[in-house]
Length: 91
Figure 1 (cartoon, rainbow, N blue to C red):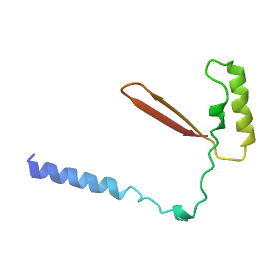
Figure 2 (figure 1 turned 90 degrees about the horizontal axis):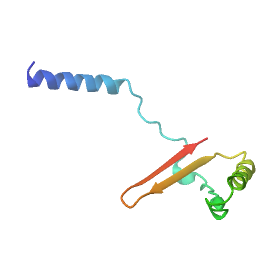
Figure 3 (figure 1 turned 180 degrees about the horizontal axis):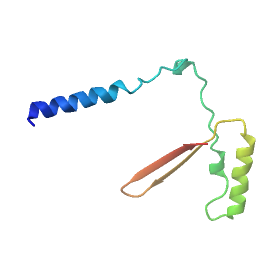
């Protein structure tokens, strides 16, 4: 199989793949019309990692209950002297 035939095969497989993929949909409302998100970071003011875990758990559960009709997004981050990482999860 020559280089031209290989390139043609790759090209045709790429076209085949993208013909089956839906293009991204535009949102119904532009982002600048959306209300700003409300972020509650008050748990950062409660307790320290050295505090009793049940106390920290109760603080967190009170917040979850308070915002029971809201979208919950949980985040965490960590860093070392050479690396950083973060994660977010929507529940």
